[in-house]
Image (cartoon, rainbow, N blue to C red; front, side, top):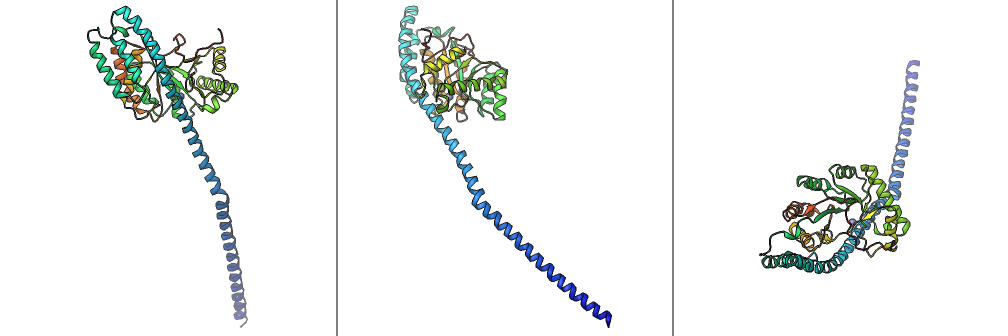
Length: 358
Ligand SMILES: [Zn+2]
């Protein structure tokens, strides 16, 4: 009987323990779901807006970059026009001296025609004019005018995702070029700085940020930008480069500082800036085909009295530039031009000259 009582008490005890446990579990469940609710509230109130903010900031940054690029293109477009005007003057002089030397207008006049009509979208006109003048010049010995002139292929804005391919094409065609580079900390890009130098090309500065508002904001910001890209190139390649190309050229209209002051700084630092007197228009109009790009370039090169510095771009939206290269190189070689990389001894083409020493 006593045993039975005991068992009953134990049984009751077990029941009450089970009830307590059940209550504790319910409490835990409540706490857990409260925590979950708190987490969800935190996510909704904090994390989502933060993520959204970050996303918008990245987006804004990209848009900023695109605006900068567009300004760049506009500036280069303007330079294209001023280069054209320069070419008209230059080629008038060329024609006179060439006429005296050869007693004929010949191919000199072909270049003039092309330069006058070509502004990036007149590729048909360029071809027509070239054909018309070739006929007129058919009694002139081929390529007489081009022997000994040098041509410098220059690529701005890299390194990009295409730099490797661009370097491959230059190697296959046994040609050395000049790369005016900007800062890029991408792992792949970093290898390209080194490859450019290792494969015998020249490397020059084209600003650290390439953001016009920053580069040209003040004398100090310009100097800081030059120092940063100079040191970055040296860190990546070991080269202490003295070659510079202004973003938008020395004739750009966006600098808030007098360009003479910026040139003065470069001069004091022993840095030489190189503009261009020929261009493909690859950055002005991304829809130009490889043969249109080459027609544009050859139009300028033929019109130049002296050596030609050709502006092209190493950008990821510019694959046509790479596709155009083999034919361009072949034509230049066939016409007797010497393709060289820019070095300290190259006579620079400059849209704006330094007035400091005069
Ligand atoms: Zn540029």
